[in-house]
Amino acid sequence: MDNILRFRDDELHEEPAVTLDSFLGQSNATAVRIESGEDVRVLLPHLERLALVEVSFPKYRDGRGYSTGRILREAGYTGELRAQGDVLVDQIPLMRRCGFDSFAPEAPVDPAVLAASLARYEHVYQAAADPAVPVWKLRHG
View 1 (cartoon, rainbow, N blue to C red):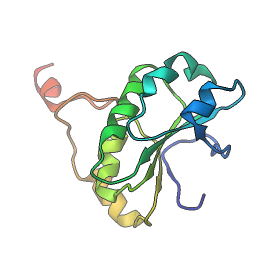
View 2 (view 1 turned 90 degrees about the horizontal axis):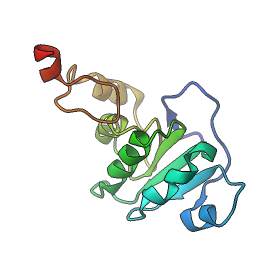
View 3 (view 1 turned 45 degrees about the horizontal axis):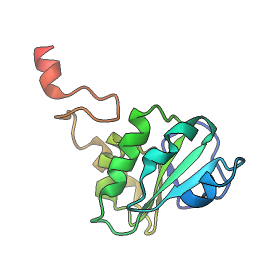
View 4 (view 1 turned 90 degrees about the vertical axis):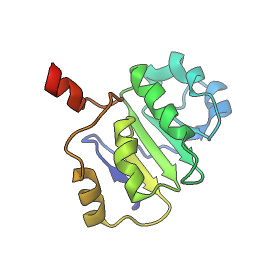
């Protein structure tokens, strides 16, 4: 768990995430892992009991997990949303916009590079799952 980057103030959820099928088949799990291509919308009736949703990013060019994060956040999920796998430092700011607040990259991330990446752009151009206000709305109200 040393490689986890978190943007949350609560305690790290250490319960192992179960597969989606296992989660749907039991009533006591509070952590689930979503594999690339699985339909996260089946979790929507269960958001209240989830403390952690871990989303698999098997390859950096597989962007389906971004949609998974946004679907969960827009549905009201407030628990930890972790991107796990082939997560690159330049993807983290975009994943944060989709609602991810925890990361478990396979390769180490240089903290200075991450800080620079997160601070690179002052304004955003479109609405997302985060509270950032698009620059056009700042200009025109």
